[in-house]
Each structure stands twice: as structure tokens, then as C-alpha cells.
Amino acid sequence: MKTLTGVIVIAVSCLGGLVATSASGQTEGLLGEYYRTVNMSNLAFTRIDPQVFFDWETNAPDPRLGVDGFSVSWTGFVMPAEGGEYTFYVTSDDGVRLWLDDAMVVNQWQGQAPTEYSATATLIAGTPIPIQIDYYENSGGAVLKLEWEGPGITREAIPAANLLPGAEIGDRMRFWHQNPENGHYYKMIGPCTWAEGKAQAESMGGYLAVLDNEAESDWLVRMFRPVSDVGFIGANDIATEGVWVWDQTGQNFWNGAADGSPAGGLYADWNSGEPNNSGDDGEDVATVGLSSGGWNDLNVARERYCIVESDAGQINYDGPFPAEDKVELETSYRVFVTVRNPLGTVQYQWYKNNTLIPGATASSLLIQHATYDDAGLYTCLITGETLAPTTTTAAKLTVVEELPALTVPGLAALAALLSLAAALRGRKK
Image (cartoon, rainbow, N blue to C red):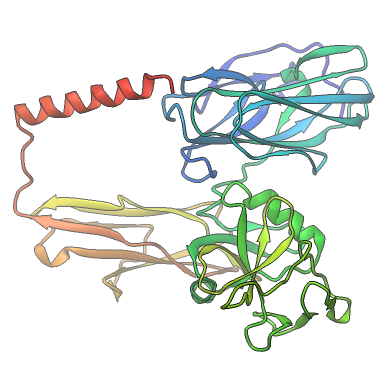
């Protein structure tokens, strides 16, 4: 790829942001996914940010987000005009993680005042390398600045001309994510006990994750640390104390306690002093730490998030919309789902209270004249050509004779509540 020179910047509207383009029409900047939670779930919007250099103070990055409790993931490539050693700086309030060329070089996923971190990398002129920044804002001020310095460059915000947008990662909680190394799909569920997670994983066509190597562990850390600091995996010694096996395969991979040894040279990554079977009730299941990748044994009654793995492809969907609705008798009701990035032909089948609805085989379901009998829970079974079928969460419909009118006093009370909420959002913490 050639180095971008003679750049002309053109500002256009794109998903609520500004997009910079080069003279050749190449989009510049990084793709930002903005979430309404600190754990990168509930996507609010995506946009191309020409630079990642923000000091929002106590303001929201966008009207679609609150001033606190949000997170952003920026992905793409950085491409220098000159080769040599570069120093990258990130200043963050609160948590931040930075990857350069797929190596995590900053891992500070914690609440903090504006704090600077740096890392060095040797870059080749005109050669793009992957870059990813994960960030969350909990409360108070919000700052995230990405800068560099290198051959012929004094410290500055990385210009749009040296950035190319990447691909969307997607909701870390709601969606399945494919690991490019092994082709398997992974999803976080919970919090729940290990046994509950195992049952739910199996109902989804998967199993509690089997970690075969360090590369798989590193990928899980990269993908799911925003959700939780630990997650249950399939490792356990429930059947025989000290004989650790993978639940999905029954394969023995470790024998003994902390001073034990791997079975057959298989992969294991216990933290120092683990497993230790601590406590009166013992510890018979394992978690993986999503900061370091190290493992720890834990009591079966404890609740944690769980990492589900699936060999088969899985369907990601949005909806059903609306999740809950109340309509008047004899009025219409519509509910729908949207499949994200469908592969091949997708088939739909709607159910009411777990009973198949004949002919309801589209992505949306329309009831023209609702009756009391139509009230209930609606789900959709989605099937793909090469993907495992999935059943959506339920949408709830309530049918009433007449919806209550909002009175003048009611409108005044609503206005007062909205005014109070706006004042609270604007108050500096």
C-alpha cells in the first residue's frame, strides 16, 4: 500500500460523525464503536473518528450516550510515512487497553484520573499495522488521547492521514464472536454458577470453553475483558479430586494441585499457587482471568460470567423489537428481528408461548386486529444454511381495551422529571 501524500480532507456526515478522505478517496481515521455500558454491550452507534484525541470532560461524546457509564472500541490500522521507531502515547480517564500489531502493549482496565501510558514499536514506511484501543468511562471526567512521535515527528495526535478504519467487532455480551485462529465461536453469558452455565451453554448448542493453547487464551482476554475480569471455563475436577478434565471432551489435562503436572503435555495456565482446592467445601471448577489469562480454581456454588464455545457457526441478531408492547383491542401489532451479516438463506419461524404460529415465517410478525387471545410471549426460531439455529429472547405483548390518556398534570410531571434528569446529568461528579 502506498503512503498517503497530498491529502485533501473532505468532511461528510457518516453515522453521526465526520469522515476524512484522502485525494484517492480512501477513508481515513479509526472505526469507533460506542456503547451505552462500560462493558461494551448495548451498541449506541458507530462512526469513523478522524483522530482519537478527546477530552470530553463531563460532557457526553454524543447525544446518544450519557456523560458516564459508556465504552468505546476503536479499530483499524496505523501507517507511517517514514520507517523507524515510534513511541505511542495514550492518556486515559478511565480504563484503557492498546494493541499494536496484535500485541497488547497497554493494559490498564481500571478507574483512574487522566494517566499517560506509552509503548514503542518499529514501523515500516507505508506499511499499515493493526491498532485497537478499548476504553471505558465510569464517572467524572472523560479523556482518551492517542498520540505518537517518531522519525521527523514531534509528539502529536496521530493524523487522520496515517489511520485507516477497521472492521466492527460488535457487542461483547450479546453476540457470538469468531476466533480467526480456530474458527470457533464464543459468547459470554451469566453471571451464574458453573453448572447453570454448562446447562445454558448446551441449550445454545455449545459448551463451556476448552482452552487448547496460549493463542486461544490471549484472544479471549482481548475479546471479553470489557465484560468481566474472570470467566468460567470447562475445566473441572468434580469427578475425582486432583484429576482435572475438560467438561466437553472428558480429556484429562492436569493431575494434582499447584505442584501437579500437565497430563500428556497438554496446555494449562494455572496462576501461581493454583489449583489449591481452598476452603471447607473445596474448589472443583476453573475460571480464566481475563486480564492475564491465568487460571484459578473456584467453588461450584460461586457465580461468575461463563465463556461458551461452539464449533458450529452461530447467528447474531438484533431484537425482537419492541421487547415489550401494549396495544389496544382491535389495533395492529408488529414485532421483528434483524439478522446481522447473514450467510446464505435465513429462515424464520415465530412462536407464541412456545407454540408454532402457522405461516409466520418472515423476519417480522404482523397481527392486524389484536384480541385478548393474542397477548403473550413471542419468540422467533432463526435458521441459517451453515449456522446453528437459535431462538430469540421473548417479546411481550399485552392487549388492553383502551390505553390511558396522558393528562395535562401527567405531562407536567413528565416534563419535571425530564428536567431533573437533565440537571443531574449536567452536574459534575
